[in-house]
Image 1: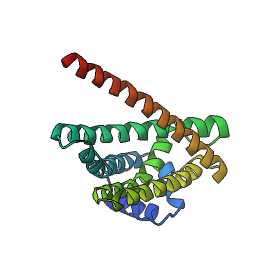
Image 2 (image 1 turned 120 degrees about the vertical axis):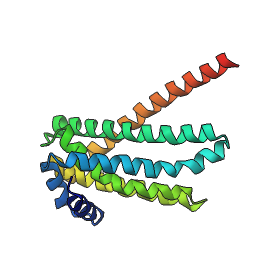
Image 3 (image 1 turned 180 degrees about the horizontal axis):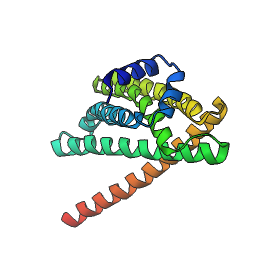
Image 4 (image 1 turned 135 degrees about the horizontal axis):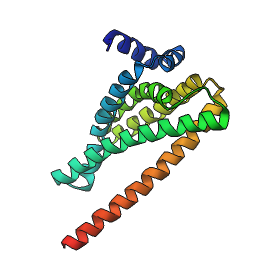
Length: 189
């Protein structure tokens, strides 16, 4: 992997250079770069969730479980969002994209999620992490627009529909896992 290419692309994403997304979309080799960014960003931003976990419990196992589930949820959320965005863009708006292309471009937008690590800062950290999420959403809309080659309105609709679907799926999975853990806890008691 070309580290210089990765750094150059990341700097262009951070500067909101929209041309970088078409370049990434056209480069099948950029998928490994995007996945590295996603995994690193999800791990870094999940560190910010530790302060939330510590407010719930001081048990190391609970905190570690919260951290690990945050990482797994972030990775699953990325895959689901990329898949749903590609399907919606292609089928609803005749966008010129597919799952791999969408995963490449959206993966680079995850660089803004690293701001989530500031969630460790008491009081102000959660607000700063929220700003990181908002910036990620803006970058995702740009990535959607550029990779699917359609207008901003279609990109926003695609992002909203795919994002709401991912939230609903994650809520269902969380409810099922929570119910399972509660049942195991009740059986063990």
